[in-house]
Image (tube, rainbow, N blue to C red; front, side, top):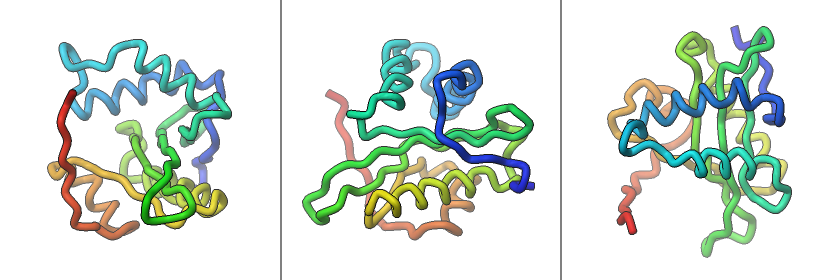
Length: 153
């Protein structure tokens, strides 16, 4: 059913439909209540999509005039490559869009954008418990085997 889905860059007038998807994504990762993102972070994230000096980009999936998915990605330098790498940071589809190939279409659209930008690699992370997404990811990418360490400062 992905024939009826359009993947396109986000535009300013999408905010009212993008925001519930963004909120759903953050709720999925339990960024609610005391651990919620500050409103200023959401505002800055949205603004970065439209700032030509920012390496942060957003695509949305649209069907029947309604946004049903989002993907955010960015480019960054690396000490192991000349061209910038593409990090797929956020991927989310509405509940009614799941199982329709929308997530795959959003990932493939990022692959296309990264190729056009000359990026040699697209990569991302997900939580180990995200079994539903991992079934898709296992079909469209290779699991690198690297573990993520972090320290909140």
